[in-house]
Length: 44
Image (cartoon, rainbow, N blue to C red; front, side):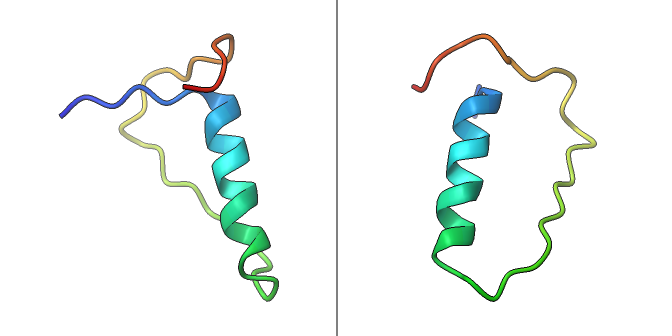
């Protein structure tokens, strides 16, 4: 499966998830397999 997320979508999704859990203090993204992030595209 290939999934092409862009940085804006990722930022919005993380914000949604954190908003649902107000006790979250830190978010760690493990992106070692990510070669590039599309910072120019809009939301899918």
